Image (tube, rainbow, N blue to C red; front, side, top):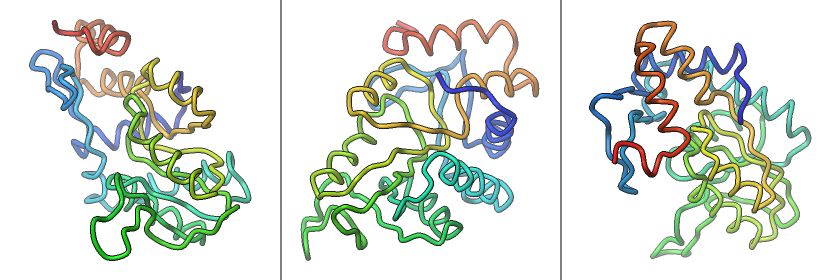
Length: 213
């Protein structure tokens, strides 16, 4: 489970203030998977707030410098990781590319957009980790192209056990700047939720597929 830190709490505060993360335990959202969720997260919203955007890009860049020194390039996950990845690559003065969910259906038929060379070491930038399934498909695409994946960084993770298992299975290191525990602590401190709602939110994180049914 991701560790709660001063940075993770601050990022959670900023995402809540921007309404990039919305909490609604009593009137849950429905994900495309069919899961009912008391949380809705769209970190693209954070891009519209310069101070929030700057804090997040610097936090991601610092995390990469600390955890993945010496990488050759930054790779964004389409679509949520494209803007964040480009911002981070700019700070680090590194090449940037992104990976489509599937190859382009016209033109060159690219799935990797940008210039990467076999043997290069990259860090993948993602905005949100839920189960990790779609993010880890990018790892397969890059590895099949001869690219070395040093790891993945993300703005936020729900800390689902299934995600931890999926990353372990693919042998991919995941580092994040904010997480579920930081979100709940920040939301409670700033009265986005009540203490009574915390228990329901905690139950959801443990069994998201069964919650609310």
